[in-house]
Length: 236
Image (cartoon, rainbow, N blue to C red):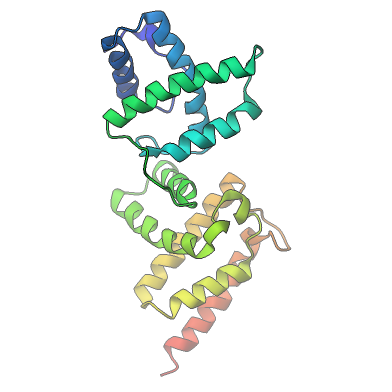
């Protein structure tokens, strides 16, 4: 294990093994302990961005993650000196960290992440942490939620969810229900129920009346959808 005096306490999201590995990687390349501490301090800003995005620990990162960080970081950077010089130092440190992640198989520069991926990853992390969902459950939830998020298209973001209506949810569910069996319908219903609970928890949607009141109107939307599905199931 690398000496604790090298490890930045800000790297709370990165696993201890990964931090140790990065420190050892830098030591093998002849970096001084002071330089390593500087790199860790700079990388902690990238880590803070990943925490804000609710990125899952161990998730495969890509060039989009780095680009989004440098697009967002200047707006919340607390550096009191030259911002330009600070950004150059951070960019240099992040490039070192990315090279290390690439060697560890945790970074793919050619990967193109779908627009809904951060939302899906955050939901699955919430399910694992707060709902104690098993691996098999998480795999199924990911499968069903991906279908819904792809249906939302470019609206499958925290900002897009703020404008989502119960009528839209009902329309999706009715269209989906006519293509699948009862078991798949129940799985989708369960997935969306927990997904909207997650969205309320995160503040992506709000309770109340009106277009944004997905939370309080969701039961009504489900009731209408299931009522029509019952008619379809018993029409023959």
